[in-house]
Image 1 (tube, rainbow, N blue to C red):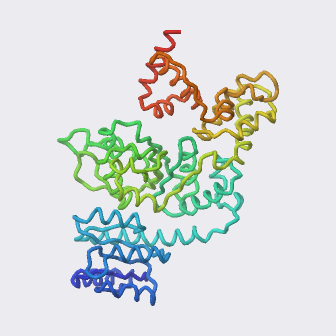
Image 2 (image 1 turned 120 degrees about the vertical axis):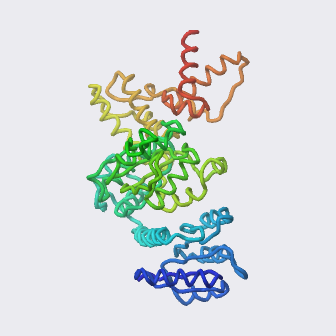
Length: 453
């Protein structure tokens, strides 16, 4: 049985939890009604989970949690809080609490959270015990990761972490810059999981109108007067498999609330229906933005974010693993030259030096675009530096150099658009995002530019 410490100054509350947990036959509960006793208890005993009230006299729950984490105590902590203390609970999660429950606590919700906390602790103990030196050959499902070629130690350790997460059924949060391979990693987790024979459904949150997203995702009744006629959502299409939700930072706040319930409990509501559904789906979500940055504080639910960070994987950008650049460049050269029917054996030395030095704002995807463009230009059997985009050499040789030339504003705008497109290898969506405009607005600017030439 799992040992649980319940810390709350309300004797009626601790008595109720005590009786309920004993009756489940799954837990061995202990109680502390005086928060001043907790430090001594934790020095004498170890627990699998701690249920901790926030609002207590003498020593607050926040102080106890802060002291635990300062000592390196990794025991999962579930916060007990009232509705008026949600902000406090979110701050507790930022300090490392596993989850929070609002009083009065629903029994089934309590059991679900405790089970999740136990699974989390067991899983991360296994991950923490991974040896320092790891190889691809040490993966139990090496074939699942073939779409992510690498020789970088950080990436290989990341694969082992992903494989451990895949073996469980926990939700996973993958984050990293655009073009780093988040979808490929999500597919690898699916292939390495017990759900590999089920569907893999890929959903881009930013491809939907925010108001229409819930209906597409959760499903919707065809006729509000007849809720028995329903349009199944993408969630239902992923039944018994994995659903990968990309760009979650673009979800509306109401959709984030629904997603939080789904991830925490597996439950959701079909739009226009009042019946609770249960999803047999593994959720993997991702973001190309660092959602912990201040600009997302009002755009993304803090409690959802900290819950996602519990089982998160950050894919490092290509500039942080320069040893992979020659490997990937050679691989893409072989694939693309075969596809277009050109016999190109490799890269000249000065060309490879430039490729190694460049910073790749759009990561692996940008390297693919650069290599493909160089193959199209090259007329010999070796890719030379002259076949690379001119902006690569310019940004390496003259970093930060700026020259001022008076010009019409329209000319400045056109030139800035051209440079931005060149910088991102003519990838319109990425360029539009950086410019702060829509792809349609970017197309209009390009059309105006062409019409004036």
